[in-house]
Image 1 (tube, helix red, strand yellow):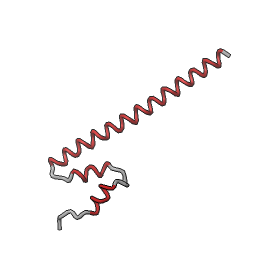
Image 2 (cartoon, one colour):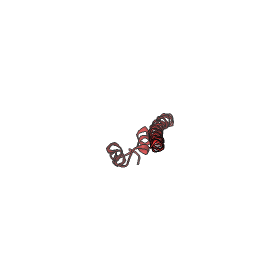
Image 3 (cartoon, helix red, strand yellow):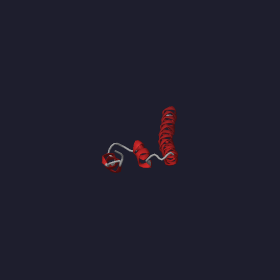
Image 4 (cartoon, helix red, strand yellow):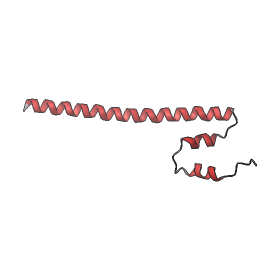
Length: 77
């Protein structure tokens, strides 16, 4: 009985560590993604590139702002 209890505790500890690692990894990924997008937008502004186009490259496919932006005329002929 005592060995089974120790084995269960080890399993619970390992699962808890894995869940914490997954949460940390996802959070870290999202933070770095936003930092990279911010840097790229700043570079786009200095190079006279549309910052909204840079933002849309990071947005999901169903982002309403980017869909509208893609159908808007660019003003170039």
